[in-house]
Amino acid sequence: MLEPHPIETSIDKPVTEVYRFLASPWNYPRWAAINSATFRQIGPLEWAGDTEFGPRIVRFSPPNGEGILDHAVYKAGEEPVMMPLRVTADGNRTLVTFVFYRRPGMDDEQLASALEWIRSDFTALKSLLEV
Figure (cartoon, rainbow, N blue to C red):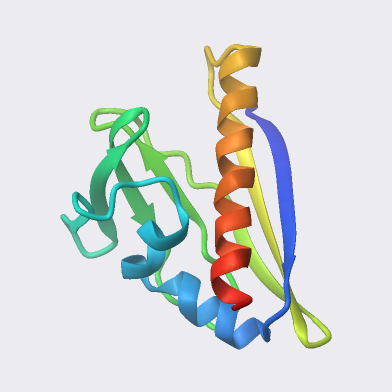
């Protein structure tokens, strides 16, 4: 079983607005650590682009009305691991919750780095949406 690491942030915007923004793959490079100049669609729910860790594929879950935004970020040839990303209403605010699963063979330093990147992504997302 993969080891889960939940991360969350609260955004001072309604859940429908946050969901709509996050559900568009075109917005992903605006808040996540992926080079927007290289980000391109390669399949119905798959996109590719360069990151600090090299080229990656991003597989998104299909749009839905449940606040589910699961996605996987992985290297070509790897098995994608879909990681839960949820938005839930918290009054007029939105709680964004992500669960990162530690991959087999990932040492503590790599895990700490991955979690810090995700926290940085969430800080960027919050700053972008709360303007």
